[in-house]
Image (cartoon, rainbow, N blue to C red; front, side, top):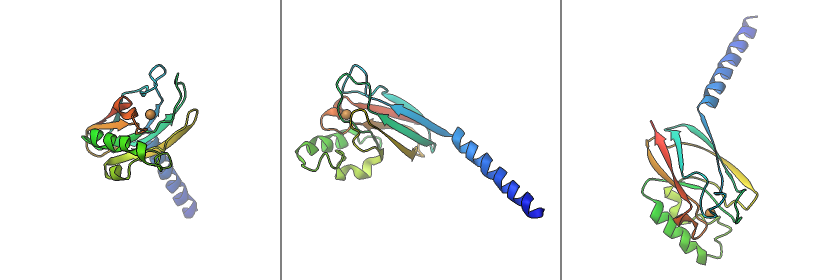
Length: 155
Ligand SMILES: [Cu+2]
């Protein structure tokens, strides 16, 4: 009897913590902009510091379908990572690497792979612990100049 009660108590604790986590999950779906083939449909996202984020890049609905990815970067690293991405145009392994530059890895906080038209990919990550504005970009060569946005991380 004692044993059963203990098990129920453990189960209740587990259920409570699971629902608390769900409440603290930011679910985001981002797509290419319907009219602008080189833009995301959202250029600003907001999450809480340390929040769990479930982000889906859904590559549908564009008037000019093409592959895209999503990289969340450290603040101030947009231009440096963008330049590395453009340089990958000459890399025969570019497509295989999802146009994610090796040299940019320390500045990438989260990313999808290259997502083909009518495909999607969902990633899960923890939002940065520090509040601030974190750029996100598509690094398919040439896209990042327009295909970008800012994730606002708030306390
Ligand atoms: Cu793109």
